[in-house]
Image 1 (cartoon, helix red, strand yellow):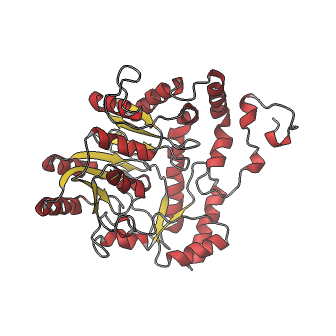
Image 2 (cartoon, one colour):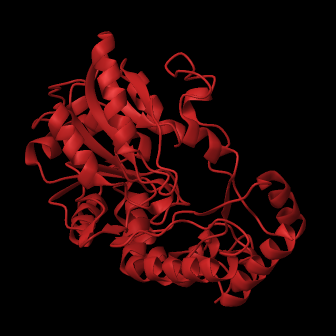
Image 3 (spheres, rainbow, N blue to C red):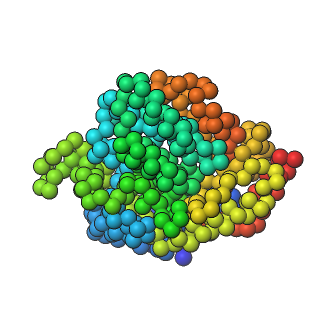
Length: 399
């Protein structure tokens, strides 16, 4: 097959050929493997993209409903509502729950900004909760204390627990559900990094009453732009979410029943995801094999991620802990190994959130993690020899 770059400028490019990526253009060392994945799956993805151009329904085309059905079949949820981003996936259920001024939304301090900002967008207040040292996820014991302090203070009404499955590992939803039930709070799982993971015999999407995810390109299941979804077994919640994503539209066009969002997922992005879904289960298995290889090669030189019985991670990131994290990252960069720091500063110490945090020392585990965490390349299409090169580079850099 001829690459697009090799064609004369006057020759039109149509069909799957328009989306061809020559093997020579796939780098050996990718952090998230987006180009390697496309090279492997283009025969599944490209025709679906071409079909969207053929029918021309770029907004709310038939791919949206097909994707929602396929996502439900994959994870076991009764309802999936596709939306325009992982952030909108968080905002929409909070709106459906009536979250607003005077309400407290409990979020982990060690997370991406979207988890915290959605509360402020709706006029509510984020209350930062520390995380567990081994799982990196919300600490149920610290959560109980934070709820009690908010109630005692009396300025805010506890409303929602917004937990995060950091790096692909599901949080302890058994414990978090007990807290939510005891305190009369709603529970939302922010599974932006964990779609495809499991806890026990249940997949992400069914571990909490409402689960959100992101299809940002670097996520375990990613599209080629922004995208997200919300999962629930509650038909009333699903109906509200479908209305909210369409400007609050009711059953009749232009009949606006509530304040909503423009949060529709593009048909092109749904087409990409439909092309990727058949390979997704195998990709999760490949990510876990790579994590096992990293564990075996690095466990004696850095602190590798903790494993938990009965939990299967989707390994959005493979993150190690190192005392001289910045020095290690510099040396790996000099060896051609890409790395990332998720996250260099906890939410409560970020300039945008200091008003709502309690200052340095208030979330000791989150603060310590931010100074030591380092993420290594992780994707399903990494060759064993490349993984071994990364392992050797880390060992040399640490030594």
